[in-house]
Amino acid sequence: MGAGHAHVLYRDVASPVHRLPPEVKIAAMVVFTLAVVGTPREAFWAFGAYALLVAVVAALARVGPGWLLGRSLIELPFVLFAVALPFLGAGERVDVLGLSLSSDGLLGAWNIVAKGTLGVLASLLLAATTTTRDLIVGLDRLRCPQILTQIATFMLRYLDVLVGEARRMRVARVSRGDDPRFLWQLRGFAAGVGALFLRAFERGERVYLAMLSRGYTGRMPAVWQGAGAATAGQWLVAATVPVLAAGIAAAAVVLT
Image (cartoon, rainbow, N blue to C red):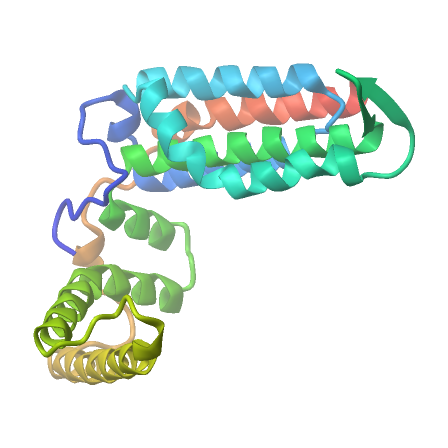
């Protein structure tokens, strides 16, 4: 987990959002998402205000709308499920373009799409402005359980190693006449997965023993976290968006 070790969603540009410590960005994203989830679905104006906040942060982070919209397609299965709700919902019916739709189903579909999209966009902005290593460091500074952060650390550190191992095993299978595209060769694929698991387990044991021999006591050394913990001023700057979102949510609850 050297410095950097960026993931595919990270955008290496200079921006005020990139320069913020990871713990404040994680906390801001979580509070913003909770405010969105707690907003009544009938408060349409509130979701417009949330979208405006996301747009402002994206502009500050120099993340283009095309990039965000393209990556947000990951929520497409949930959108397809939401589309079915107006047709399957019960209760009062309304006519829309000649179709008899459930009023409650329409609100439910809107609720899923609006909150899901805002949550996905907030997560994408966090990923686009924070490297993988910084995400783990931020969670550790927020007092996330050490066992979780360490598992995530080693998973990310050795993921490329395992992917390379799996690729070499596949090349070896194909060179021996095996073709994993055919269903009747599923048994060979399953055997390969089992072999990969055993190799990963053995590698993990060797890494763990090597760490013990170097003084590992169950907690990552403080030097791994590096310098740059958030200052009070940075917390105040990062709190702008979640505080505004919480105010919007509170107003929506009162007015609805």
